[in-house]
Amino acid sequence: MKEQKKKKVSPLTIILCVLLAAAITVIAILVLRNKPEEAPSVIGGGEPIPEAQNVPKDVGNTHLPAYGSLTFTAGTKEQETVLQNPGENTCLIRISLILADGTTVYTSELVKPGYYTKPITLIAPMERGIYRDVTMKYECFTDDEAQTPLNGATTKLDITVQ
Image 1 (cartoon, rainbow, N blue to C red):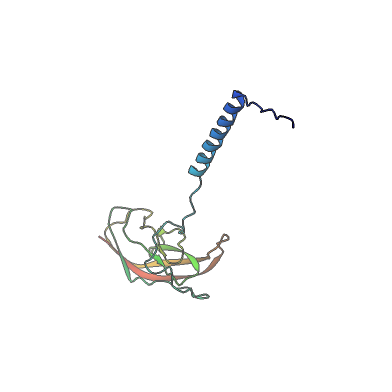
Image 2: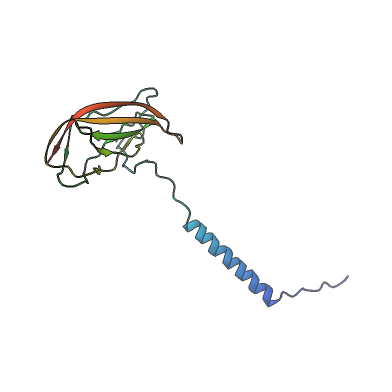
């Protein structure tokens, strides 16, 4: 039987292997740290409506909440009010508030079914008073990449600015 010779591994090879392993580890850490977060489940960043996520969807019908009035704070664009897209819907909704003279004071981002809008940020602060016959305009879109426009609706309400 022949004796097998042991091959020596040079120190340079060992150093290169350690450096390669370290480089792979650093790259893996950077990739995992910079991994994009999952897209939010809400377009517009609102909060989920409690108990609205498990509501059966009503295909073919759009449910729009009715608001008789809203109350805002005078002199500031930021308001605490949030609006909702009911959980029964299968469409995205954009909500606008349009004064009787045709001035749009608010337009939301698209809101997924079962979610609220972010707190309202008006286009400009409103002065104290009661604004009558404000149009709340609902625009509906498919809940997919195309976001194809669907039906819409309008309703009237009053806004009290205090």
